[in-house]
Length: 484
Image (cartoon, rainbow, N blue to C red; front, side):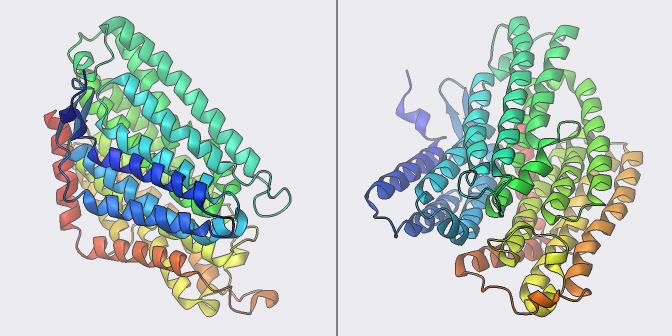
């Protein structure tokens, strides 16, 4: 029977559930025309939970070991909560403008998805792992298609396609994961990760593990399971894409780390080979397919696929240091990519795009947005001395120390290739003349969106200028997972 002691490790998750219920209750009593308050309330509650994560103890296990609170789980909770708060701030004006009567539904779906994200890193039972993935994924598909009935010709005319592709891929990935887990359960007689880790290694168990990891690769958009990413990014609302591009990927990486380091640690050798394939394929495909893109959302989608490859390099190293550097990479990428998409929302609010043509002359129309975009692009490219540089350098060092020098050389060469498409965006913003019809300044950026962009900018620069505390936190989290 569950006891009160089981609730300690779930304190933040229960707080998030309480926030969800509060937003729902307020939505019921608010009259139409005042629904904007829901976004402000959601952002405030998520910010409060993020702050509480530094003072609330979540250590221990719950429900007989099915859930474990640790530094590993806590780090991913913080990333999810921070990403949710920033995405909510960035979406306030967009949701108020495009979905004035459905703001409650939008933010409630976001909170439901976040609840799955915060629960998953602490799961130590495979069934709980899958349930958390579904709790995270189904609201995301609904949010991706949120504008399907509101806009059939304009900015969100591809919303139905975006939601359908995200849902179908999520369903397929779940089916593949469950197929793999059926082998694992059949051969071990348990869904508990600790029991599976102690099971004797057999070829059939290895096959089940391969299918399970492949299902997780769908979730993060690693090649060859990346087909949904560019179309979903292009069709979904831009502020939601900012959230979709970072938080679910972080959660998917948490699940893969849990499988590699705990559940399947006795078969790490073959699985690390699979990780190497994902690294090479994702970096090559993402970098090359980004080169011809003119739609900046699709460009950043393929860029994100390549970035996933760099992150998985940490797992491919097969060391605790590699896992720690991956965590640091995830945190830096979350701030960077969120900021980049929020700038795109600020540049073309309520209009199709943005394309490279939409960004022409941005430095003359809005110097601060152009500067923010440039910093985010430099971070994605790994240019000194913003956080993206230290993130890439860290995973490269971890891979080199693991004897993967050839992989480091390959990653460095592909990073040079990626400079081309990032600099294309910077060139449009700084060197190209604006179109005649757009010589007037862009619409004023709302205060919540501007605040979100400034916070992302401060994180990218701050983590680059002083990465030590973030590296130490990532190392502690990786050690806690290895110690399990």
